Image (cartoon, rainbow, N blue to C red; front, side, top):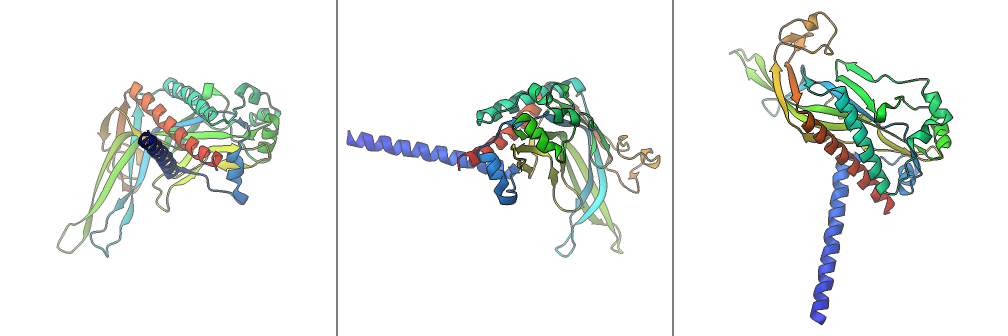
Length: 339
């Protein structure tokens, strides 16, 4: 009997240890993707330890339908030969996905996100009640642009849950917005990208005089990438730049922002075709840039990929990646609640 009790206690101890290790692993993984920077006087801890009810004016997803990787890193041939960053844009266009599908994904993700938030004990103020506030109505006077068309980042359109009005919050209106709703002013704006570029540059000697030539290769992998709404990956200078994403607040106008360190990714099924001598309309409005040829705006153009997605696969993978982002958020929030 005594042996049995010792064995049972040992088994229980092992189970607790495994569960604890698993929880720590989940948090560590979440922190590889997202972090809350701390703020003045540890603001994030105050916001996340005992969250006030959260008032979201909308949940917004920016779906990219065209993307670009503008720069290629050329590896040096020797230890003394430094790597170079060369402008050699590669483009990708998404086909097979329409606005109805993007709206479906946005609506379904909203339900997933809010349900998971409530699991942590966070109260979500009903959208209908949020819309009744005076400050909300003032925000409507300055609607934000939903269409994005940029030669450096591609084209995109912003969708909101149930096509609710889209605007940016700013200034002292946020404080009034929180007071109207007796809770924290919260926002969630994410980008859903559809492609991962794989590019490479190498140097080659092309004659006896030692003149250097360059070889470039490019490919496009169908991949859902979830980032904050202003996340610029692979910029020529520095690392990723990120703002937006998820922000939670309090009635006292304090806020905790989730800063994204890298995209949440998942591959999906799509047919990929390449057109070497074509460039999409968003790339450059100049007449020269729209002409045929490898030279593009004075630089080398790596061609345009067209990814024709399987609709069901695109939707399923997008929702899985968005749910994963949300799980990371919840792991981080729970870590504050448990302190």
